[in-house]
Length: 324
Image 1: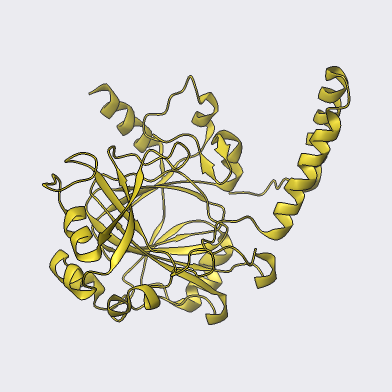
Image 2: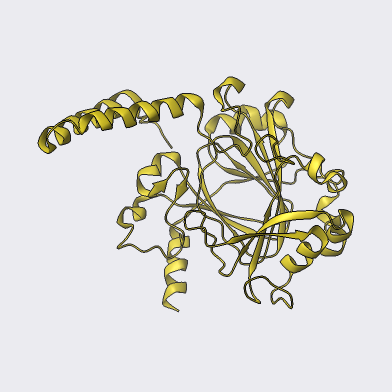
């Protein structure tokens, strides 16, 4: 009961993500996109997928092709501790299992959770594209192309068990999270709150955003929480660098569409997932690492002093004061 009350208080303090109905491409690009904030778009034309994609239809449409999936004995999947295993199942069998609450057949436990994140044929070279990996289902989807065709990067097909929670992370490209069936709760944090999220690469160590361990993560309370619930047919715009934590409140199917907000040459050409930092950012981090290594040549008192001077330089030269 206490944990539920804590969660309810936290959700009451959350900032609701704005919901806008029937937004045209022109309005999105003129009024919404430049703000660089999340927004839920409703009433968009998404095709027949929102009515056709039942469990029966999904399992029959793409047959028994094998898919690689995440399987977890607990609802909260953690990419840092890798508290899940990868397994392979025929797609039709996977869909039926993911829609179950209790399993007669299972890998770990009878209430294990399943998660599919589609990938390219060769994950080292190919991006996820629903038109290539799931061509039959792709015919049912109309993707809102609120970006130029040459900006398109990937379309990631996702299926989640009810109750599944994915780790908090950011992506380096803009994306639409299209909720086709089921309901998701999405918690988001601004890029400027990165200092409070205990990052390891692009991922936060704070897995349970509803009931965080405040002794272990005392600064997390400073992170401003944005939140929305996505119903079937809703589209969430997630700008690049915004952190997001996704909870599937029901068995659901979604499609992420990523596109390049920066010039194409800004991105790492070997990146097939869309989560490698831009080339300039990677170079800057490498330079910083070398600078910190150089500081180790000094005694602690000097190292501390010059590290603080470096922080002040970064704040003076790079920090923005006009974040919303």
